[in-house]
Image (tube, rainbow, N blue to C red; front, side):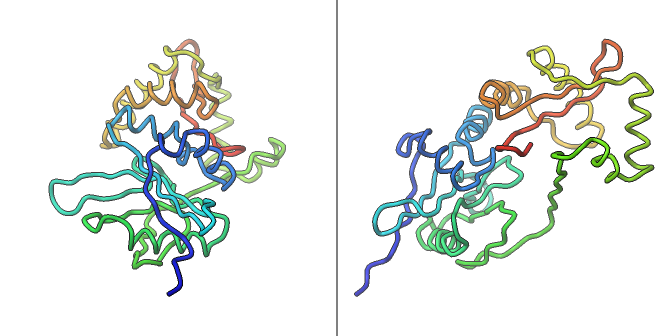
Length: 242
C-alpha cells in the first residue's frame, strides 16, 4: 500500500516558533492577517488562541499552511476560522494544488465537531467546502504620480470633495502618540454608533498599537481641522500594501 505523500498537523506558535512562522508567511505572500503579531492582538483582546495547520511533504518540508482559531458556540457546532476578526486570511501556499491538498486534508484530519470557515479571496471547494461570495475587496495603486491617481477618481464624488477638504483647512498627519490613538478611538466610537455597528473595545486598538504599530505593521493617519482631530484611519501593512 502506498503511503500518504503528505501529513496534516495542528501546532501552537510555541511549537512552530514565531520567527519560523513569520518567515514562512512572508515567503508565501502572506498578509498582515497571517502574521503572529496580529494573532497576538486577537488573543490579548478576545482571548482567542491561534492554531497553525501545517501540510508537510514526505521529506518533512512545509508545502502549505494556514492559521486558524477555534470559536465556541453555545448553539450548534464550534467553528474553526481562518482567521477571526480578519478581512482575509486562508491558506499559504506555492501552488494551487498544494492549497487544495491542505484544504481537502483539513476536512479529513480536523476535529469533526467543528465547522471550518476559510476567509480567503481564493475560492476552495476541495473537501466539500461551499462558497459564499457576498464580500468584496478593493485596491488602489498609489505607485504613480499624484495627478495620475486623482485622474482615476470620479470627478464629482471624489475629486471635488478632496478639493473642498483642502479649501476648508483640513490637513493630514501621521499619528504617533497614545493621545492620537485616543482621539482616533473617540471618532471610531462616534462613527460606529451612528452606523448602528458594534464598537470594538479600546483594548483592541491599544494592542494593535503595541504589537503592530511598534513593529511597523500598522500606521495611524489623522485629519485635523485647526487643533481638533476630525477624522482618522488605522492602516495595517503587508509588504508594500496597506
